[in-house]
Length: 630
Image (cartoon, rainbow, N blue to C red):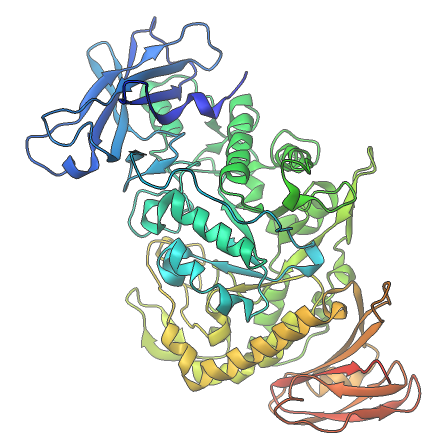
């Protein structure tokens, strides 16, 4: 079975006579002409779609007998027509129809291989647009190593409207230390407000955000600024009107793609990776995004729905194939680590076994709710937990540092994402208190006057091991909430919550932004804060009693780079605390967070193991650096 995405979809080309021709193709395995089926394409110029009396042009596709995937196709000559704008330059909209004899089986369905879309279930193509092929400017970009990543998750529409709107804020994101964007789903959906987790197609950036050209401009701008781009890949389920749902549900023919697999819900079947067509379809989709849009990896949504074990045909095979495919330095220089490894980012959302997915598959990162849950519990209970401190070093709680294939010996570093917020949960500020004011769906806002309570958690996030991830707006205390008993409820994804950018300018916003930017500068400037070197001072029983957590971050000398050592002290209490610290090395230790605005003399430590106090303000922290001349 060979799936060739370039013989399906809509592909316009101009012939020698100057006419625009468009080739339409679609795979419909098991839907054949001898069984009485017919497939039509209905096409209309975008400027005519709402004009009375102008109907779509209808063309019958031809079935190619003997093809493994039952290809249906036709080439249409778009010669100028006196009826409206058909044949003129511009955007055209189209849908397919499925008939059997005189009966309409599916009145219309979108092209599952469309490269562009209109609104809702409309597929699209464009002819005659000026400018020609997109010109990329990212030849020198190389994807950061996993230990160097700082990720910012965002929804394009809610963050700043469009792909170009996101691109306009890249300098702002760099100020937060961000070098990777994780874009929530960007493929088209049926509803005007929908986060993208019920896709209608898998090859087309949403027209509402700027379509294909807009996404290319964003990725190109990101790469020009040293920022990688990760796409949210929703490969486990789709919209009920996705073509391979709609056509096969209405025709009754065996479905080549959809079914029960992994932990997918029985009442809402998802994609079935036991089927070869499914495996090839999603590998083709990933390869297309890597090639056409220069993306740098994928965050795979709901991996339990496509996972059937480390040696299975589902998720494990998909990430393996993707990793091996990107180990082509001449084709993908941005993934070339210089030692045979690929730097492609493959992030699994497998919350039930995040450790196992890193240990046994070709994923190099994963979502895991450990820090989010620990922070929420600690914020709600008011007591400093050792389990929170251990979460700051995932290795202490069983996460691997390295994936190694037991057969081939292939290996690469792995690390989980660490976050206080994600799109699946209420904002972190809501853990400390709520306002009386509620949003239009009745959910209360968090009390932003309590922003200071989040400060030690921010310092922890940027100094922890693993990959820090911010969910858009947390840096100025965005404060909406979701239904407590249904964090996955539909009101979460069908209600638009544009960021309150005005929060950036008020007292809580300005205070938090200051801290995020300071911590971002430290993380990006010093290797130790992104290293694997971590030591938690758990043996002092007075620390947690006083609301204090203390840990060390360090990196050994590397070539011309000197060794680095930091001590991090976090105060989660409402009182200023004098914390007694056992300093690991002699020398001059300088506090880094407030040294510009409130400079003081470095702390002189006479010998390693010496115990001396430092005062840490309430709901705050201190980061001490051993000076190189110390």
